[in-house]
Every structure is written in structure tokens, then in C-alpha cells.
Length: 127
Image (cartoon, rainbow, N blue to C red; front, side, top):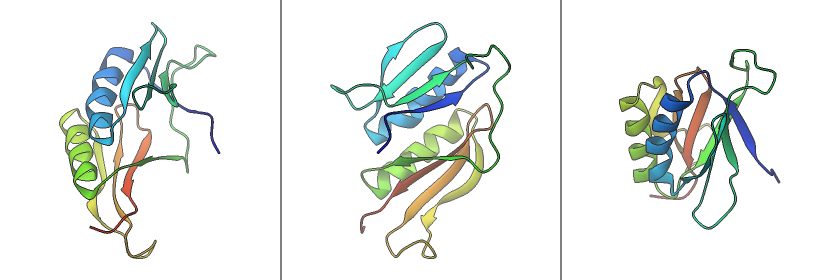
């Protein structure tokens, strides 16, 4: 349904290190890097998640109510991505665990990246 998603940053170098480590357990890698934008996706595909400096040259800021949901292949991948994000300075917004109010197999974790963007890392399959 989506072509791509963009996330604003004010520090590309720190953002690249953060997303390189956080996305690796999800099978996502840095596919392209430009001075103002870095694109991530599965190897052999096109970038679908872009981390960039805002095009209007204003500081990046968070959007109230916006959460970027990242699909994880397993619950272990949720745990690993969450741990990597926290090690790189992410703010905890909900440790890994079942969220039964969504559905019986919703295993997710929530963090805010270095610029305050909210990320959900989620696996929808049974353990």
C-alpha cells in the first residue's frame, strides 16, 4: 500500500548509526546514503524507509499521533531491535511484550528515536 515512509532527523550521522543497528534484526539494511538522506529496505529491493533532513531546511520535529510500525519476522527480532535502539539512545515507550488488546499474537515494543520519532517494532505471528 505504501511506496515509502520518511523520518526527519537533525543529525544524519547519529541517525544512520541508530537505524543501521535498529533495523538489522528486522532484515533491513542501508541501501543508499546521500548527504541529506539515507534509504533502508530489504537487500535487493528499493529503499522504503528514508531518514532525511527535512526538505524545507527547517529543524526536524515529531508529529503528534504518528507512529512508524516496523514489521519483525519474529519475537526475538523485536527484542533484538528494541535492545539495539535502546543501546543507541532511544527512549523507551513500551518494552517488548504481548499487546493482547490488539490481537492474541501482537508482540511489540515502542521507542522514540534520537529525534523523538515514535517507532513500533512488531511481530504478528505466534511464538
